Length: 268
Image 1 (cartoon, rainbow, N blue to C red):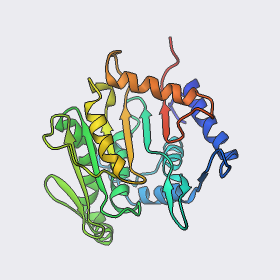
Image 2 (image 1 turned 135 degrees about the vertical axis):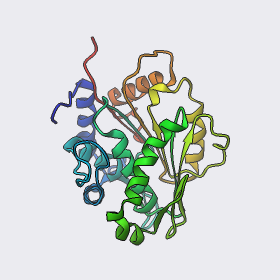
Image 3 (image 1 turned 90 degrees about the vertical axis):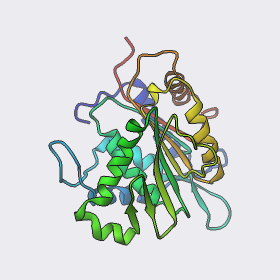
């Protein structure tokens, strides 16, 4: 798609999704794919506006690769009991080069999780190594909420922005930005946690604390977005390697709750 370089590991991730589609709703693979959620998200994005650059003020039209990725993340479910359905993927890892709009995409995902995911009292957080970085995704969401063109929509959704948080008055939802040095990261009841630039995290402390807070809900999600880094001793590198291994694993041993996409140049 465009200038995106699709490498072998990304082809494998795409192949896995098609393979899963052929074996859905079987005894060994009880998950199923419904495309309607991805289509609803695409239409939701069209109600948002770009807030900077050459496209400022224009509707947010998803690129094909973005639509496919989010449709995979949001569209796979499993049933538990009568009329109870939950999202399959509990982790979404996206590694892609700078300039491909991943932070802006996640700012809309955060708003979706706060308003449109059918969750009661959703708590959404964006986190990074420092507050400035953590507020990039949060700031993108806040710009949508405070855009005068979106006032009617935000009133309908029940969303309002305060100084350091965004509230949903209809479902008692909350969205805040956190940094690695935040004093109060324990005790969170997370629906979505978006961890920005994972390659810059020197250790796994932030990830583990947030993940513990995301275990309290049936369909909470840890979302990591990152560019490729240089530090081979960092947590970001080890996470990238584990996601690669999961993508390349045989279906019988692959963790079915992790969705990973790694765009980049081939090794060497």
